[in-house]
Amino acid sequence: MPGPPITPAELAVALDVYLRTGSFTRAAEAIGRNIGATAAALRRNHSDVDRRKVYARELESVMGEAARLQRVALRMLRPMLSDADARVAQGAVAQVNDTSRASGTARTALAKLTGEHAAEKVAVEVDDDALLAKLSRVTGR
Image (cartoon, rainbow, N blue to C red; front, top):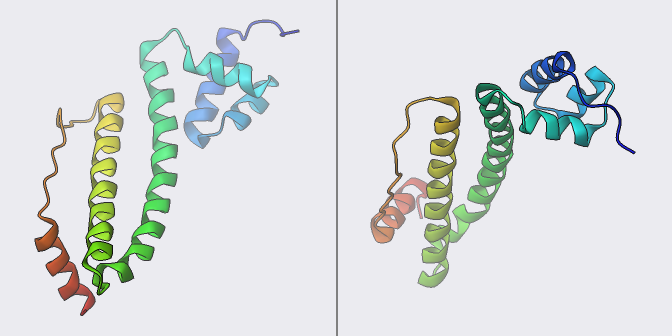
């Protein structure tokens, strides 16, 4: 059985904690409420500005984790760039390109949520052969 609705005062406290910590758990603990109910209340906040802040903070957290994982993937791909099998090297370059494209798209989405200037569309065109040649020079292979 759900508890009483989250009050505007509780919501204000939860919003402050969430924006500072990026944690729905900490926001819920700050007001003594259920995590799911607190997260839902923050996401459906009646204030458009506050709702955008919540989504921007959530996306910022996701992007931070994705960027960390992209760095790990790029380190793993680096040796593949100079593989003797051209298909392996081209596949690695394609993955690097895809990672760059996804990062740019996510950055644009975050900028739109936060009101920062962002291009309406991110277009990335990369010559795989030219990129592979540059990467080969950098890696010395």
